[in-house]
Length: 70
Image (cartoon, rainbow, N blue to C red):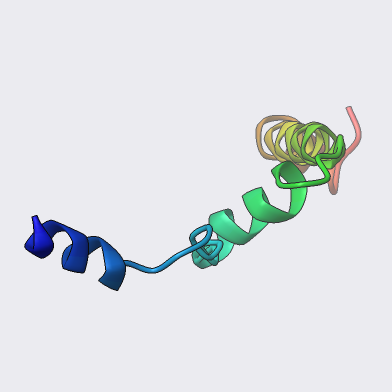
């Protein structure tokens, strides 16, 4: 029984330290989904979709009208 008591006496007390996020997505998640969640990720997704949509429009349609109107 003394072995068990000595084992538990050596363990750290209190709550575990917070794990620091690593990498771009970890920091992004900690910043926007952590203690103070915000709606910025929704705005970021909408902006990304607008940029991708414009890029597709340019590639498949607008680039053909750059020098000649039809």
